[in-house]
Structures are given as C-alpha cells and as structure tokens.
Amino acid sequence: MDKRIIAVLTLSTALVGGVVSTSSHPAAASSKWHTGMPKALRGYWHTKSNTLSISSKHVYVLPRHSGASASKVKKVQYKYLGKHTYTYKQYWKSGGSYSNKITLSKSGHSLKFGGIKTSFTRGR
Image (cartoon, rainbow, N blue to C red; front, side):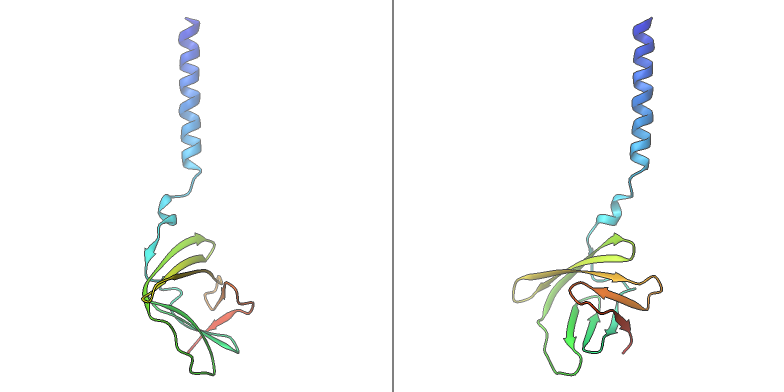
C-alpha cells in the first residue's frame, strides 16, 4: 500500500513539474530564421552621415553624401530576438556573409544598428 501511494505522489509531482516547466518557455517559432527582412524595418533610415537602406532583399549602410557602391546580395535572413530586436544574415553573390543586430524603437520612428553609435531615423 505504501508503494502505491509513493508511486502516485511521484507521478503527480512529475506531471505537475512537466506542465509548469513547459508552460513557462516561449514558443519555438520566435527562434526561426525567416527569408527577407520584416516590414517594420524596411525603408530608408538616416543619420547625419549615413543612410541605411533595408528592403526584403538587402541591408546596406552607405555614406550619405557620396556615390559609394554596394556589393550584390544573394540572400537575406532574419530572426526576431524579442524586445523589438532582430538579427540578420546577409549572403553576397561573390561569396561570404555578414550578420548584425537591429533594434527598433517602441514608437517605430528610430532604430539602432549594431556598430553605429547614433540612432537612425526614418525618412527618404
């Protein structure tokens, strides 16, 4: 009889622990790599000296007042990290890749691009 009670208590503890542990984790879909770039980030973003161009097919940082050229991109992927933060990977047609983080402000009017101290504001 004691063995039966111990078995029931052990089983119920394991079930409750399993329910608690699985319900506290976020959905796995947020860690998936997606093709392209999210619509919230697409467009032109500016600082005094740089223009950040984001489309579904590329991410370019160009000096604002020069005719600098950019490498041709083969593929772009992004992953949402939470709290308005994304990481992306960009693959060039000539070979090689690059990755960085982008954090969008809560209002959606400015963003921080990894490696550049000033915030970019939306505009053309």
